[in-house]
Image 1 (cartoon, rainbow, N blue to C red):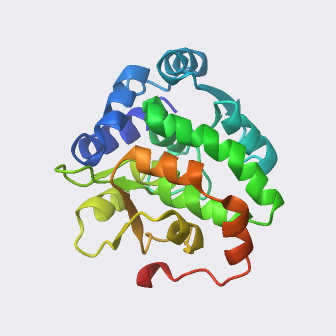
Image 2 (cartoon, helix red, strand yellow; image 1 turned 135 degrees about the vertical axis):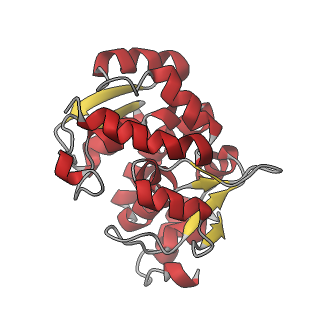
Length: 238
């Protein structure tokens, strides 16, 4: 494990130093994630000082109700096992590298950290209204595969699925074949996605405030009632 961790980190930081949003890069440095497999308690203490978030160890994917409860209380679940040398490029389900290197650094960004807590609070309510697929799409296209292009700045990435993927991170940010779409909350929540291929759409935020405010102000009951039974939009045509 201690050989796999620096191998993954060395390879990814060559990319993230160029194409990741500055708050993500700052988060990696502030939380001390590169030298060795991070200590859960130490990282949790550092993160709490920055945005009042902490991490909790879990054995893998957890049921949706405790997941939303953790987020609503500013706790992020981090998987407690690491991929093997044979799985450097792809694993079927998230591991410690995906969670620590992908998700945790951007939680040091205050506005995004607030969005994630709000997602936990409103997401659970949305599921009860039958909007589980819709809120899953929002998480997928932001926390996992989100891009951001602030005014006057180059396109950057912040989503964990990109940060932990050597090949897709390059494609999403630098390839002329990547399909970039301006962020719109309703469109995002209607757009289908695939879990085992490069994404056919990447939604681009102008600021993190845009994401937090759009979700905070959304009339979720009305959105869900309108679209929960509709066929998802084709990501390639959005």
